[in-house]
Image 1 (cartoon, helix red, strand yellow):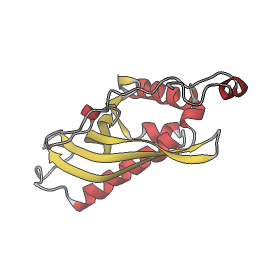
Image 2: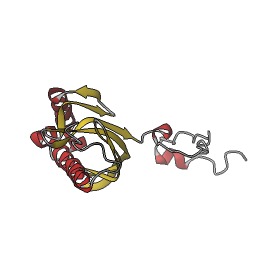
Image 3: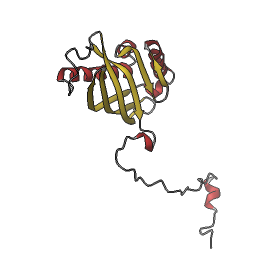
Length: 187
């Protein structure tokens, strides 16, 4: 039997495991959003994979640590003040652990403008294992919705494409010069 399910794989995620998994997601968010390196790393299994949209896939604590430091410090004004919100969890027990899918939103305080905005939305499709009696991320996969084909839409896609019209470039001449233009250039 596995460490995850000593009594066999349940059909439905047990309430206690569900609560522990939601706690894992909360600890992950607190860790990555507040640059708490040890808190963030503690949410990953030792041989975990972290597949992040902008940085690609890395494996193991050292690589994940380096990846997070890059997020926090290479462009700190880009990361500072973020909150990852995860919700609408679907948790499926598997012999190896759990598959957890959820929606995410990233809200952010902008340090330059001192305003708040939605930075991004998307879905997650993660694999979790139990390590030393605690749920941990074994494979964390971020699917940010940046293109039409990134939304896991199950129905037929009938989205109309944007019209091909493109506006003319703005007139950048001095206003005094623009003011001299004929009122009706066609007539």
